[in-house]
Length: 375
Ligand code: MTE
Ligand code: MO
Image (cartoon, rainbow, N blue to C red):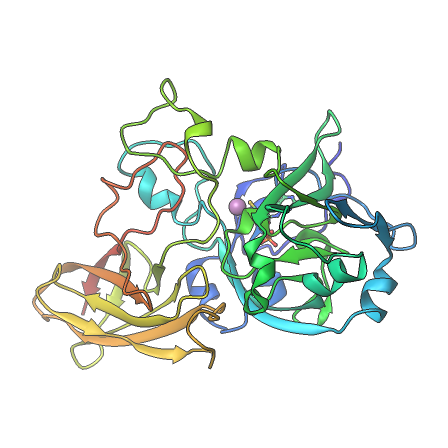
């Protein structure tokens, strides 16, 4: 069993797939902390967790304009400054379960917990590449990453990001060996992963084995034939993966975590406490989260409980929000909706119908839950 060496996981997790392991925390657990504790951070694995001996571990770096270089973990820790970045990572399939209600899609049924916000520490990628001789970026268009996790045919997980992420030092791309102040745990990429803040989880390659500077995107299945968005009218007979761009920076999203869908709630002085998270890709700041209990007749602005003090364009963390909204006491049932607005004034789409896509990615429509009001 190639999965025999996989680590123990949080027994509270909702398991979307056992082998490879894919699990997420129940939503109320997710909003208990601004910094998601490591054992509450969702796990999204495509392959068995590779067993890596740090003694033998090296990161291979090469490609256009670089000296082929091998670095040990110790090299990475001692030859470069250690920087920390607090960043949310979200799977492209987060909240897919909501999109699936419109029409089935192919993919794991993430409920809204496929996001977490952690402190990542390690070496700035640009410093490491300069160490390997990088001077001229003009021919380089993509930075490819390869994981050390492999399928049965020895093909490893891979992805790439556009080189512009390097030009701009404010993009904060790092080679992380720590998560929340501890060595990366096995499930999150021990001993090394790349953190590309604001960019879809799939490009934050874990168990990093190789970096290649290239004119081309990664040729990996996950870059070419997966993690792309399509029109709602494209189905598996008509889809042409070459026609669509690989997902990089993610759109604005929010979710209601307390109360949960279909739960019974008690009002306090005629009010309901609603809590959740909001986040946007590309470093966009969350400006506002709006909540309604009557399908939009009246919108209330939630209080942002936690927000990092970062410049717009460099807001990598999620925000947690809370609202106390008045609810008509005579109602036995109602719906609560949430939508977030980011610093580009982009707002979540109202429904899933017109953003539906066959892989169920980018599922960022208003979060709508149903609740029963009990006396
Ligand atoms: N890196 C490798 N090597 N193998 C993987 O399966 N999964 C990717 C990404 N990096 C993956 C990977 C996907 S799709 C996501 S959403 C994130 O890792 C999940 O990171 P996490 O498990 O630390 O939450
Ligand atoms: Mo993902």
